[in-house]
Every structure is written in C-alpha cells, then in structure tokens.
Length: 411
Ligand SMILES: [Zn+2]
Image 1 (cartoon, rainbow, N blue to C red):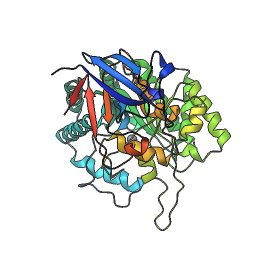
Image 2: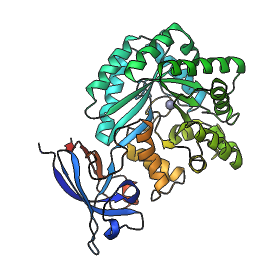
Image 3: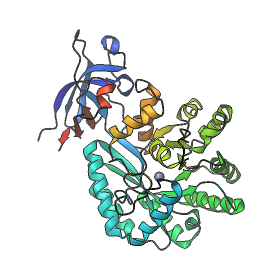
Image 4: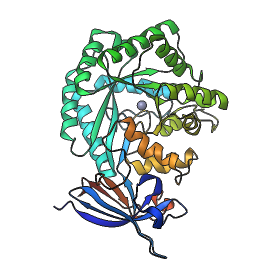
C-alpha cells in the first residue's frame, strides 16, 4: 500500500509551521487552511490554501499522546465496581482486585487498551503499573515484550507505581537496575495526610537517590486530595533542595493546590518551574472521585490549576488517568472524549495556543518523543483527521475520524 498522499485540511495555527505564511487563511477559531502532501510517510509539502468562501471540511491533528494511564486495571469496573465513587472505596476495591490479579489478566487489559488507543488516535502512552514486593517480577519481561510488539505503531512508557517503601528494599533496587536498561520510570504516591513526616521524608529521599543512582525519571501521584493543600509538593521541593540532586520529575495530579490562594499558587509554580518539574493535570478522575458528598452537591473540585502553573512557566500536560476501573468508571482511551470533557470543564479555550500545547506539545516533551507534535515539512505523517470544520463539530457525538500512521491509513 502506498504511503504517499495529499489532502486539504484545517490545522490549528499553533500546531503547524508553514513557510510563506503571508497568504495563510486563519479563521476565528484559529484553524489554518492548508494543503499537505506526503511521500514515504513524511510531509513533503505544507502550504497555505486561500480559496474565497471555501474551507476544507476536515481538521487535522498530530496523533495524540497519553501522559498518564493505568492499563493494568482498565476495564475492571464490571467485576470490581465502586458504586460509592469515592477515593477510599476505590482504594479498597483496588486492593480486592489485586488478590485476583495475574500477569495474564494484566497483559489482556494492556492489549485491549493499546488497540483502542491506537485506533482512537494515540501515538504514545505512559502507563503506571501497580508494583509490590509480592508482585510477580516476570510481568516486567512480558510488559517489555509488549512494548516492543507495538513499537511500530505506538511508543509505550512504563512507570512502576509502588508504595515509596518498595524503593527502599532489595526488590526495589533490582527493579531500578533493570529499568536503567529499559528506560522505565519510578513511581509512587505522595498524598496527605502524612502521619509520620520523618518517615515520608526518609522514603522520598531514598527514592530520589535511587533514581539518581540509576539515572531514572520519577513520576509521582502527588497531592491527589482535598486536604492539606500542597503538602506533598512542599515535601518534595524541600527534599530535592536538601539532597541537591537533579532527577527528572513529573507530578501527576497536584490537585489540592487549587485551594491555595492565587499568589501562593504562582509562587509554588515558580519553584516547580525552577526545578524543571513537569505537571500532569488529570481532571476526569479528580472531578469524579474527589470531594464527594453523599447528601449534597459540591462543585468544588480540586484539579491542578493549569493556567496559574502555565503563567509560572510550568510545563503542564493534560492526561486521562483511569479507564473503566474502580477509580473512574468511564472512558475508552479516546483523546477526543478527553478533550470534549476537559476543555469545557477547565474553562480552557481550544482556540488558544496554551490549551493545545497542554494537549499536544507538552505531552510530547514529557514522553521525550522524537517528534514534538508540530506539523511541518519533514514531520512524520502521524495524524488524526476528523470530519469537522469547527470545534463544535469535534465535541459532538457522531464524529468521523481517520488515523494515519507513518503515512498509512490505519484500519
Ligand atoms: Zn493515576
């Protein structure tokens, strides 16, 4: 099958780089009308089209990047439901699920997730995988085989999501050593209340030192709560200062800092930016799970304050988190579903650069991908093309899409 082609499409202006842009027609929603052709899976031409009163009827995006998922538990809601829909119940149902978990079940869930993700338009995914001392370590061999199996279609990154104690055991050390060859990421949870602060400090230091020793990244579930705003991130910043080391860190969630006042958020944001810590906002699970009240409605939901953090020059991505598990019963590894919910709920304008940056460009940087996601001459033809002419068409129920991988239409 040929992997050459051409198309007339709309592309958000901030997601493309065009030579001779003087004649570029950009509409009020910031979509540019362009002609794009490709050869051997690479964009060979990208130029403005400027036809009066005629606009392309398709919108093109780079294939999406999922910064935060948990495919080891995806699609378990049916068997392990959480009808109370709160964090505590999610934790205890997750624990029950663990008792029946086998590596075959995890692999089955992973493949189901990956196939959906590719079909729906993702090109890369970071997934956390629950990790314990009693964990079957063979699972990692299988997961890295899976990573290789899918590598022509999608880049897969793993975070071993373990209690911080795990990284202070011989098992933790062994896994870190293995990850240094496989580019795995150390994960953990840093959520208040911290009953024994000295112990938290100690374990966090151990984790940071281990990452430093093996040149690994860390991705923490941090401050995913409604209490003690910023307690986790403050401990993390103090620890980094004390140890004086540079480990690449991602803070997933960082939800409760929303209840700090604006100046506090901005000043915390500057410290986060200064340490080059990246943040992932996860609005769907946060809005569903946190601050639930049984007998009253509260619209007070904690989620990472994206705009303030961006103002402080923090690189913020938006991710999905859970899919059909005790933490979040919905979703389908569909980036359009995520955008349709997250953009209105967070009051982000889709026609603004910083919004699209948090969906396309920051995630590409976070996963350290070869392609930054900007559509330009020489970039790979890794696209999602939607039958749509405006944002309202994208956020609708009968959207038709085509996914191109290396210039080939994916069916
Ligand atoms: Zn998560």
